[in-house]
Image (tube, rainbow, N blue to C red):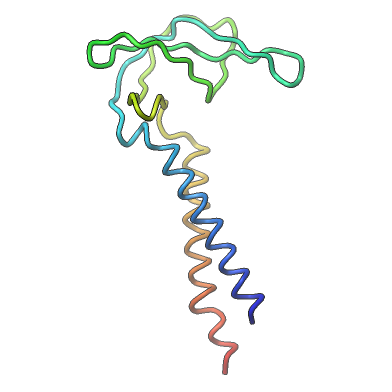
Length: 130
């Protein structure tokens, strides 16, 4: 019985951790403003596999200040053309391109783990106590 409850608590805690991580990564979207930004160039960094990873450099106008930001959350092709994209930016929380498939998938997984952990902890194992 203790093993079953500890398993339920572990599932619940993992779900809460995933939801907290998704909340922290969504702060630029929640508190930031939606701005059009231009990709003005690329920044390169050497990766572990002896090749280079290329990150886009954005230039945006936030509260009448021109800001240049390198987005290290995603890589691009080194021959990228200058283009305009919509981003979320906040001075405190940084830059985000919005919700992605990965963010949405982890949000669903975290919610399912919390629901299943609570269900397993409070209802499923009470049947065995008779």
